[in-house]
Length: 282
Image 1 (cartoon, rainbow, N blue to C red):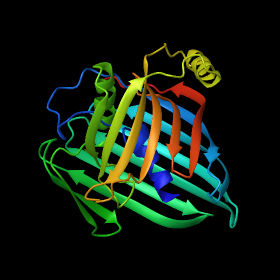
Image 2: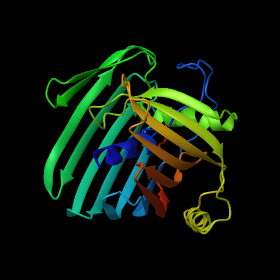
Image 3: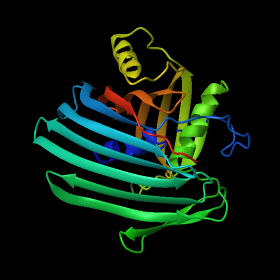
Image 4: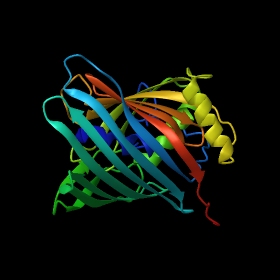
């Protein structure tokens, strides 16, 4: 369940995106991508569960907000999730994440709070600073105190990762691989392998409902790419990813729909409402 919660940021901010390439660090410049400041509300539900899974049900919501601050980006995610287990009843988790990232890739701040049935079970807070965006660096935690995670050269922060992922889709690249740090867990950084494909859900009931919400919010139609991401903890020898994530991304960075696959059960996030946020006067 913790992995499920942590992955939302990597996916939506960027945290919540990678480029498909043969090399780990692709030196080609990203195409211009304009991210739309917005607040989106998603309903969470159990899509499927294998017979051997102990999960019988899932319900909840996620609210994601994204701001452009001229020389930086800020994002906030709040998740409320209740999982129903066959042998253990229901467990409710509340998880919040806030981040701030400079556009030059030199600075990143993050703060995570994780509560289970009302009790605080995890708090993470820290900062990354580096002289150049491609430099190796240390993530310095103030919670837990004195924790340090070393980030290899070329590590991306979540919003830059999202921009590069969308750019890869615009360029027609179908595979994208990057190392990403978002601060949402002590398993960071993640090596994320992404497969980018064209929108395969055009005309579906869910897509039509989302398109109506976009129109009501004054958002124009945008090309959509489906991104399937596999997350591996950096340095892990396990050939299987810790989790996989499928996201339908518009070119403006808004996630139309999200699907989290844990192997024995799958959770869907369906767009419930969307609104734009005021942009900066830079």
